Length: 140
Image (cartoon, rainbow, N blue to C red; front, side):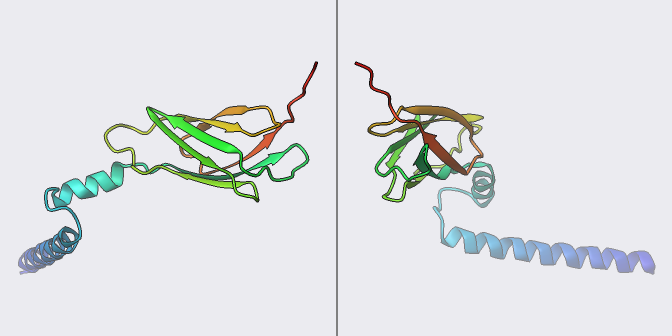
């Protein structure tokens, strides 16, 4: 009698789980491309890496550097922006990296008038960076 009870609970659990799975599939399918299956969408969402980097650019004294060019390069992708008046910037990739593993590192390049260019390597997972620029020395 006890084994029959456990079997009944297992069957009821499977039926409830299947109903929830189908309901979730309908809800997600209603808002996404019909050409991509439910499982495929979950796999893509779980394995894609969307690149985003926030930060600021300052001079050696700690003052913000406005309108500096900030570039990040990884794979064949190059993202570029300018800092605001407060020296802050946000870079966000338009497309996530889905068809291959995300890169280990990205290359950051910061260019500004009257300052030496700054190039550094960052881990792909780094979300925020503060860059200090050194003044350019002019020698006749």
